[in-house]
Length: 161
Image (cartoon, rainbow, N blue to C red):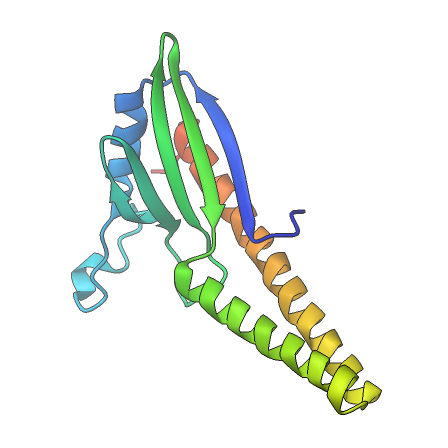
């Protein structure tokens, strides 16, 4: 388990670069949440964009989840297939709110310990800061595990039609 909400991995595939990107294009859609026709297609596994140099995708979910990872990937051609470089990270909005509340809580800790000399409130704020960050990392790692499973099934042709 990582202590940062970030994960990277390198996959080696027997599929060519064009085949990997072709599989991703088939199961990835740019979603317009105002158009109901783009939402609910069971063949679409990822939201995002796939290009010739790489892709930025996230797993399709039914309800909102702050800790769903953004998967940024590059595919490199090799003589016997391809190498896929993946980076799983939080969306920028989730990073902002995690950093915001971490800074606020650490500020309260500093105030209560140094200025106010109220160690009980300082300890509560410190516990909340640790709980906030630890919870974010825990839930992010859970979502990475689920996203990795879907991506690995796609690359290994274990899709259910």
